[in-house]
Every structure is written in C-alpha cells, then in structure tokens.
Amino acid sequence: MQSKSESGLHVAIIMDGNGRWATRRGLPRVAGHRAGVAAVRRIVEHAPELSVFVLTLHAFSSDNWARPAQEVQSIFWIIRAFLRLECDRLRQQGVHLEVIGRRDRIPAPLLREIERTESATANGHGLKLRIAIDYSSRTAIADAAVAATNDPNLNRPLTSEHMRTILAHALKSNCGDVDLLIRTGGEQRLSDFLLWESAYAELAFTDRMWPDFAESDLASALSDFNHRERRFGGIPAASVQPISILSRRTR
Ligand code: FPP
Image (tube, rainbow, N blue to C red; front, top):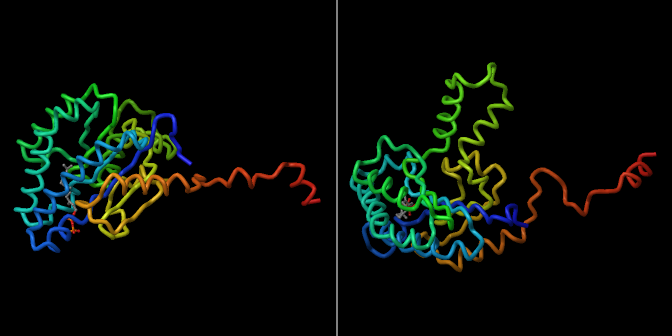
C-alpha cells in the first residue's frame, strides 16, 4: 500500500558496496565508486516510471571523512564530474536536484558545481533528486533544533509538540517522510541516514553491490514494498470491529 499514491513515493538509498565490488575484481576501490555513477544514472532515469517522486541518495556521510584522503578526494571528483556531465540531461529529464548535508567543508570546485546544477535544475517538475554529501542525520536534527532554539520569532517556552513540528518542517524540506529505504551491499544498518524522516519507512536490504544495482532491483524492491501493510501504529482496517460487537463482548 503506497502512502503518497497521488504524488509518488520517497525512496532513499544507501549506496553501499562500491569498495568490495572493485576489490573482488582486483581493482582499486575508486573503480567501484566510478562504476557506482552508472548505477546512479540508471536509477535516476528509471525512478519516475516506477512512481518514485523523491529519490534521496547517500553519497558521502560525515563519517566518511575518516577514509584515506585520496579516496575522499576521488569521491568528490567523481560527484563533481557527474554533475558537470549530467546537468543538461538532468534538466531535460525534469529532475530537480538538491544537495543535503554540510556545505562548509565541501571543496570549492565541487560546491560551485553543486550550486550551478541546483540552480540549472531549479524549475524541474519531475523527479526530486536529493544527494546527501557530508551528511549526518544526527547533525541535521541537532542543527535544526539549535536554529529553532535561537529563533527570536518563536513563542517561548518551546513545547515538545511545537519542536516536533519545527523539526519535521526543517528536515523534510517539503519532501515528505521516506516511504522505502533501500541499502545495498549486504549490511543491515541505517548509518546515521535520514533517521527522523525514516520513522515509518519500510526497510529493504539487498546483497547486491551498488555498482550492480539495476532498475529491475529497484522495481523488485518497490513490488515487495507494495505488498507490505503500512499501519503507522494503527491496526489493519479489516480488524476494526463495529462498536456493537465490541460492546456485546464486554457485557
Ligand atoms: C559506499 O561504498 C559508497 C560511497 C561512500 C560513495 C558513494 C558514491 C558514489 C556511488 C559515487 C557516485 C555518486 C553520485 C551521487 C554521482 P563503500 O565504499 O563503503 O563500499 P564497501 O562497503 O564495499 O567498502
């Protein structure tokens, strides 16, 4: 059962397994990241026809700074090249690109390319493509809470309910909650990705390494998703008993 059938689904993907994909082929890890770009292209192209309206891809987590500097530089270089080469195609496809995460540590040439692509695709009415770079969900939540606390225009004291509304608005940036979160590469964890937005996400873990992830894998994950019953804490509609039955039983 899809929750946002009118507008489409929000699918988030933790693109894991690039390094192992390359190592198994006797290639340097960076070859896996390069091969991962082709998978990004495939999924971006086919997502809309599978009713995906928002696609959030985890490209570089704030914890990925712990990797060797050369690998970090290569990932940034690869993302920059992707944006430069794909910008026109993204625009033609009606994609609206937005990068989420910290921007103050992103190297200037990549940041320029991000800003250029964001502005070139700003009028896209098709797929909303969000790429997470230097992203930490805990940091995003903490930053939004600090901003709310320091906002002189908000009524004091801030209640928990009010803070929930503020955070939900700040974090989802009109994209809605995540409906389906997919992680490739065989690990089964969330790795500080979209923790707030995935409160009721369905989770799908696959052993497929990201460079091998094809549109058929996305279609299969969505088909499985469509058979899941999403209750959001409620009970299945078929289990709701008429009040008359309930009162008879408790008599
Ligand atoms: C995780 O695999 C992958 C990354 C940290 C980088 C993801 C980047 C890309 C797919 C490049 C293209 C991205 C865009 C948006 C164009 P890993 O290196 O942790 O794999 P491992 O677990 O096998 O070591």
